[in-house]
Length: 126
Image (cartoon, rainbow, N blue to C red; front, side, top):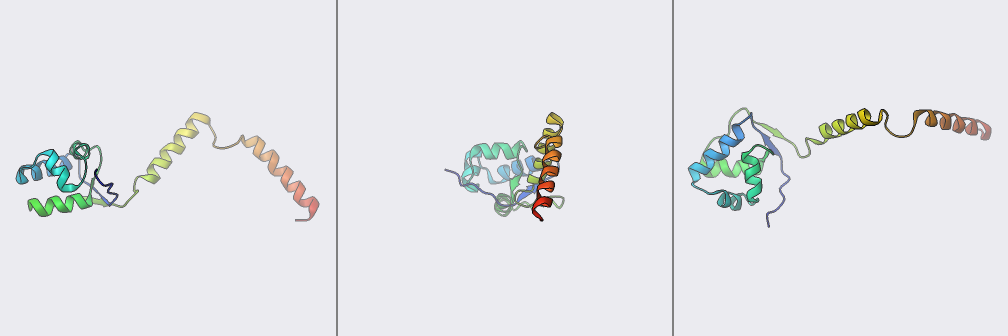
C-alpha cells in the first residue's frame, strides 16, 4: 500500500509538470508502475500528476531530478502544506452566502436576542 505523502507541493507553469515527468520517465526508461514504486505512490497518483490534476510533491521532484539528472525549471513555486485551505474556505463561504443570503441565524432574531440579553445584564448590574 502506498504511503500518504503530505510534503510540500511544487507548482509548475501550465503543461510543464507533464513535460518534466515524461522527460524523467523517458530518461530513466521506466513504466508508470515502476515509477510509482520508485516514488512510493500509486499508479493513479502518477496519472493524476501527469494530467496535472494535482501538484506533484517536492519529495517526488527531488527523487526524479536526482535519478534522471534533469534540472528543475527556475519558474516553479514551492507551496506549503494545506496551501489551498484558505481559498477553499473562501469559495465555500461565498457559495453559502449566495445560496442562503446570510450565514448563521436570522439576523433579526439575533438582534432581538441581543437586546434582551443587554436588558437582562442591566437588571442584574453587569
